[in-house]
Image 1 (tube, rainbow over the protein chains, first blue to last red):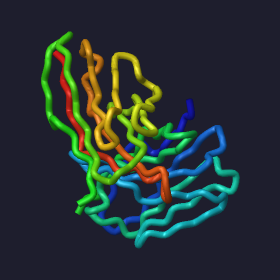
Image 2: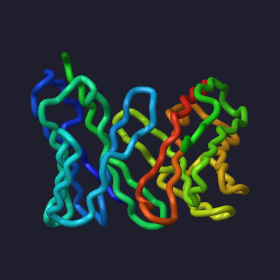
Image 3: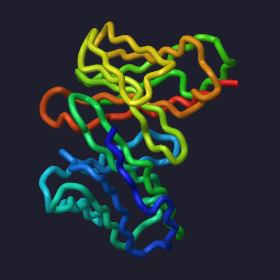
Amino acid sequence: TQLLEQSPQFLSIQEGENLTVYCNSSSVFSSLQWYRQEPGEGPVLLVTVVTGGEVKKLKRLTFQFGDARKDSSLHITAAQTGDTGLYLCAERANFNKFYFGSGTKLNVKP
Amino acid sequence: EAQVTQNPRYLITVTGKKLTVTCSQNMNHEYMSWYRQDPGLGLRQIYYSMNVEVTDKGDVPEGYKVSRKEKRNFPLILESPSPNQTSLYFCASNSLRGDTDTQYFGPGTRLTVL
């Protein structure tokens, strides 16, 4: 079983602040995905990172994959209330087996 | 509209009463999965299927059954539900071709077993 650790578990910030959340593993990721889940809905894929050292940007969100492919981070610049949600990292191990982290619950206050 | 649908969205039942949660996707995806989500534990995969009549256990299969008789449908069966199966359940599908890592999730089924 792949163990993905996410930190912090909870984050409450004011609108306009920056934040970073982390996803770590003791094993090497084949690839890593980040999802956002809003209350009452299923997770929605934000990005997949594959190559060590890779950086991907999605508007105010910046995703980084560690050089050794054992960690990843999600940085949000100038957070907005619409960024509120649960952020999950996930790895596809083999065939169609996926492992998810326990998530970071983000609350952005107006 | 491309989507994954689940029914019912909410279900309260009693211990031992068999139930089925349906899942259907209209994207012609080969792969489908069931997950449960519990506070502090993230999503844990129950079962997955790679095509019709091909299913395999995920991390937490005990107490659940699945079947894949048609490509679009992947029902989750609880033959004898117990209170520890109270959870939020998600069905997901992804494609065999192209971007195979992108899972599309349904809206969830909140199950309470008394």
